[in-house]
Image (cartoon, rainbow, N blue to C red; front, side, top):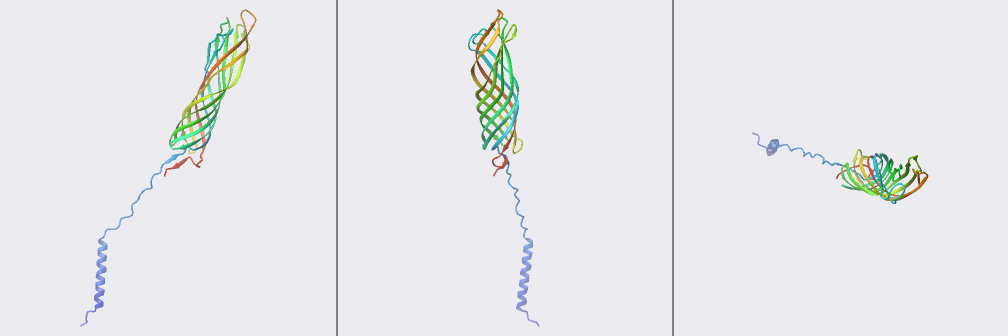
Amino acid sequence: MRRFSPGLLVGFVVAASALATAAYAADMPVPAAPAYYPPAYRPVIYDWTGIYIGGQLGGATMNDTFTQQATTALLTAGTATKTNPSSVVGGGEAGFNIEFAPVVVGFEGTWTASYLSGTQIQTSISPGASVYTTSASHWYATATGRIGYAANDMLFYVKGGAAWMRVTYSEQPYSFNGFNVLQSISNTRTGFTVGGGFEYGLTENLSLKLEYDFFDFGSRNYNFNNLSFQSVAGGTTPVVMPVAVKSLSNMLTVGLNYRFNWSGGGAVVTK
């Protein structure tokens, strides 16, 4: 009879242990795959910072009041004559913005050509006579500061600063024998402007805006000292007409700007 070998016993023990381990492992749950977390959403924010150039087109009105400063052969002192011309206007602009989200501050300069010209007829105190008063603006220029609120690619802003206007004023008496001597005075008026608007970012560099501006050039005295007219009694009557001209203007324009962004792009991603 063969004796039972100790080595064989050890082999049986090892084999049994392996089988038990395999059976236990089969009963254990399979580890789950690592959890998936989608990348965090980082919205794109429009950046208004940069230098820009552009143009605008729209309409304007001018409200001028000519007030006689002395009684003459044509009009009495205090007589007020108003002209209210309106016309299409258009020009260019340049400026820069700096955004401290959501606040945007900047500076802008504009030049706008205008074709505003209006004439008002005032009945004279001399029989059979009247006075034709004309005001005509040729261009407007501004240098203004801007401050606004940016709602991503929408900018709401107000502006204000200095304004200039090139204008020509004319006085011409009309009597029973037709028009008499015409005198014109051209001058560059200085005043101020305030306004506001809305600008929308079409692309990272291109924006469209709608803007309203009010201009006040105050009152300034002019002396028309080279006028004359033919009176009913006969003969030519020379006239010196000192007047004060108060000038206001209103302008509504649509503009298109191209911005050169300092940061190299018009949109940034939030952190």
